[in-house]
Image 1: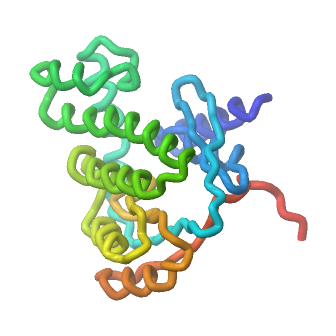
Image 2: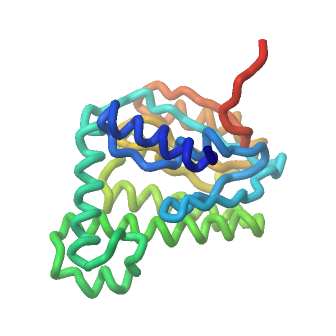
Length: 232
C-alpha cells in the first residue's frame, strides 16, 4: 500500500498492542525522512511536504536526559482525552479546527486545566506552520524562538516537561550559536532537541554537561534519510 497506509498500520500496532494512543509523527519520519530535509506532516489529511534543512553550518543536537519518570505512560492518554473533551465542548471534530480566539471565547465552557491543554495544542499548530515557513526562508533565529515557545508551552500549559528537561533546555540556550532548544517526545524525561551552529556543538555539549544535575548523553546529527535496511 501507500507509505501513509503503512504508517497508519504501524500506529495502529502501537495503539492495539502497546496500549499507547500515540500520534503518527514517528512512523512518518521513519518511512519518509529524506536527507537534508525536515518533514512537515498534516496529521489530519496525512499530507506531507519536505522542508529544506541542508545548511552544512547547522547541526541538530539531541540530548538524552537519561531520566524516565513513570508519569509518562499514564499521563499521555490523559492529555489526549482532555483535548478531545475540549474539542467536543466546542462542537468541533478536533482541536485542529479551533482558532485561539474561539478557545478564549469559550473559556467558561471547559475546565481550567482543559483550557491550558487545548491552548498548547492550538498554539503548537500555529507554531508548526510558522516554523516551516521560517525554515524555508532560512530564518534560523525565528525557528529557534518558536522552539523555545513550544518548550515553554509544553512545560506550563501541557505540563509534560520535568526539571531535568527544563535544565537541559536552559543550559543549551545559554550557549552562543544556539538558535533554540525544546523537549521532544512524550515528556517526563527522554530527550531535548537543539538547533545550533555546527561550530558551537563542542562548547554546547560541554556547557550542558557542566550545568546539568544528571549525566547527559549527546547525539550530534543532521537531517537524514528515514529507516532502511543497511547492507553489511
